[in-house]
Amino acid sequence: MTTPDREPDAATRNPPLTLAPSRPLPPPRGMRPEGRKVWRAIVGSFPASFFRPSDEPLLTAYVAAALTHAEAAKAIARDGLFMTHNGQVYANPAVAVARQAAMTLATLGTKARINPSSRMRSEDAHALARRTPNGTRRPWEG
Image 1 (tube, one colour):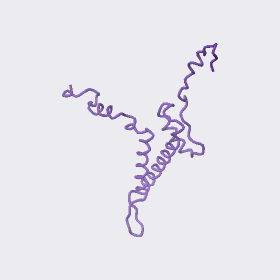
Image 2: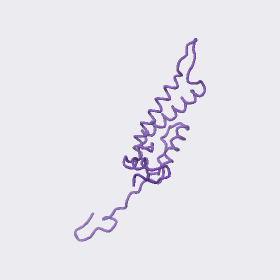
Image 3: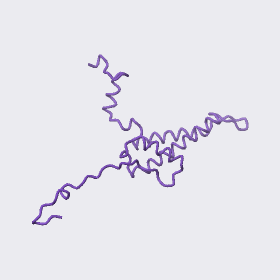
Image 4: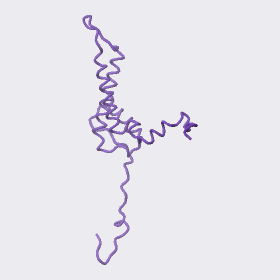
């Protein structure tokens, strides 16, 4: 607060900046250990300030989908794509679960900017696509 006879000091005129958090977003309380491991792997692969507390519900759903997909993949590896019951051959139900979990992962990964394509601007993607594997421009592109 300024008074008529006094200038505000430097700290009042220029309040200190609030810096981004220096620690990654922790997993929510109550998350199972295997979920915490997936959470830390995801959150730890980005700068500490990348995820904010408001991202927690989205990341929690992403972790749940990742665990569901992993469990379904194990069931498919164990039981195969097809199963037989009373002479009837049918698709392993885990295939549908894995497919749905993969679609959920793709959607949530885009929303949370986990997928590399969701972090890249379309102009950058087009420029990258025009480059050769060694990173140079093609001769006919000038």
